[in-house]
Image (cartoon, rainbow, N blue to C red; front, side):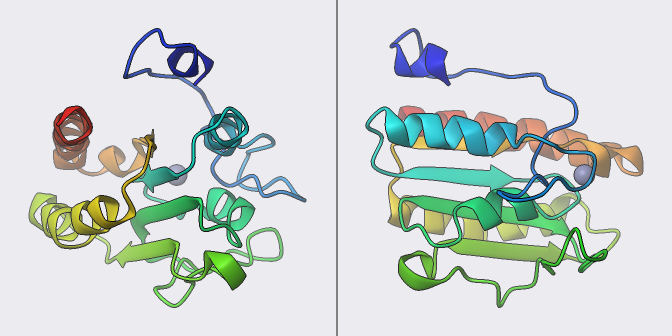
Length: 175
Ligand SMILES: [Zn+2]
């Protein structure tokens, strides 16, 4: 993120493990202690970005990132994930469609839970019918893409889809 904010390019890639998207402001979760995407978003905001969108396609709900910006209308968090629900006290969020944010952030969290076995067509439909229109409406200065590849464990098609998604987003961001 600093690389971008310093004006060295329009696209950057961070290879991190674990992804960090389960770490919440007040507790670790899902092997994540620091929320890498959330820290990148906060740095962008602190550096003058007015609006940042997060698109998370990891097979698990990006609950920590959503929680961190749940009351903010400056960060639009979108998560496409397996419909797994809560997994206990460390992960109270369900990832359901009715978790929309709160206060000023109401309407700035979009959860898209998908049934197990959703393939390219399902992702493609959700992406083009929900993600792209909402990103266009939000008009972010920056997009942070959380590219968890665990959905690829059972379906190589999701990996191909995510590459296509990255390509589409790059095209969208350049236009
Ligand atoms: Zn995951």
